[in-house]
Amino acid sequence: MATNLALPAAPGQASGKEGAKSLILTLGLLTLLSAVVGGGFGLTIVSSIEKRVEEKYKDIPQKVPNTSPYTGDIAIKKMAPVVTNLANSESDWIRLEASIVYKSGNDLNSDVLVAETRQDVLAYLRTVSLSQVQGPSGLLHVREDLNERAKIRSKGMIQELVLETLVIQ
Image 1 (cartoon, rainbow, N blue to C red):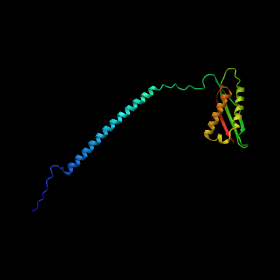
Image 2: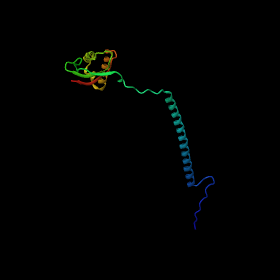
Image 3: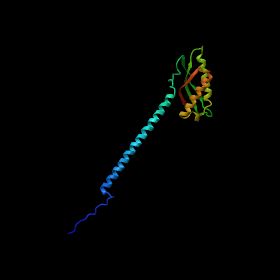
Image 4: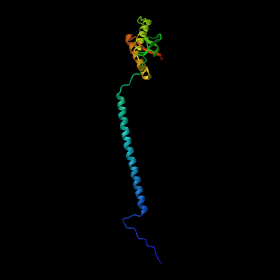
């Protein structure tokens, strides 16, 4: 009769199942510890950043809401259409319809102001080439230039030159 004799485990070694359990338990505890430490560190960083942001915004003075530039004694007057050819071209024509927003009062003759502005717009459009007017940025530049010229021409009486239509043919 043959007997199976198992050798007893050495006193310093644990069996395979007990060793795996202790390894998993150790890794689980380390994972839990790192999550707690990381979460605590994250919370302290977030709270310190919030405090700094709040202090920064407390130091900035509150802005006054923008008031409309079109309050007070203002009026609007439509200009006659301006039709001219563009610079360096016999075949490219431009037609512009616009209105001026101006400060009324002060014995101002609005018809004279409109006529002078129209003449200045005509002179400006004769210097513009087709490439300068093309696209949204070109239109924006033309609008800004015309507004600046109108304000200078009227010595600040015109607040804005409103472009209604711009056709290039």
